[in-house]
Image (cartoon, rainbow, N blue to C red; front, side, top):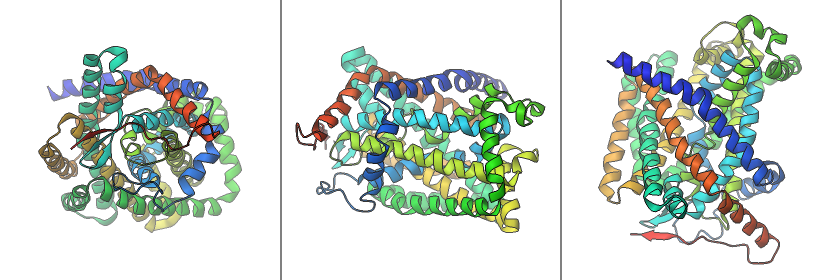
Length: 472
């Protein structure tokens, strides 16, 4: 029975992720890139200044304690984006699609930046205030924004469908995947019982969960820059060590993107179609652009205008894919770990072994521990936002919190293929109502952007706070 269910789920995933969602996510990204006037390129400079100009300082308008800073919201978003996909996912893309998959990963990130720009603006526009804190996300902008377009009943159904799917996909099953990855890495590197790892992770995570978004944001603000810095430093060390190979490596990436056979990809059966498929799929899975997850973090920030948080959001995709994923790709390709015939997840570990010797597996285990743990706290909060959408009682959040901690512990006890397949399935189906909402609300998205431009031109004051629904 379980075997049959697993076969059905895998069949649906092959169609969903192999064809439907890749084209849908990239298509929406291309549409918003054109429709909004290439914001990820034209407005990249202002976005960098918005994110890093006041790095650890509170926004001057944040005086009432209702929100977190723009950078803290970015840190929470990146904490969720940067996970096992940045280590194992990149390796899998290279092994299945050749070095050229990295080029298509970059392309998917470029278009994904415009999609997440739109998501963040809507999250700001339709957020609500609950118990003195802002919350928001796709369920909120679907139920409110689409009510006048598709009808209130349909909008509520789509919002509820999304909320349930993301709670299962990220809060429960997704966090099982992350805790399993952490436990496996620690066991392989330090020979520690996975159950002990799971209990420690659950205790640490629980202490953070209790503090709500404010504590999650503070932890993310401290940990995310640190973990990114350490990983990038390791990549730079490898770049310096293998500097003579950098030119040929980039040549392999570009040539492999369009003609894999020219660099020996034909021997492995790699085609341009596979390079595109695996590069795009792993890129989108890593940066989560269009999936509807990170808008929950961006809804919480108090900024002068929704567009400013849109800027912050697409910088998150840039950091995740163009910086972190590229660092992983450089580590793998420069060390030649992709030529050893290993399975995807083992490739990055072997690359660290080649580059750093016996300490390599321990380094990758520590990096994976940081990446996966921050993903756990980010995904927990995304699920909590949707629990608050579905259930107004505080007891609902308490029950959800306990369940997540149990799933974290259970996830360390062993990999069950069906659970991993279900994770992919729910990750996929939650995307559909979000993409539909983005397309149907395209005119409002463009109106928000035009409003910002008018304010910047001095026609009206730049500060613009959307009307926020308040719930005690």
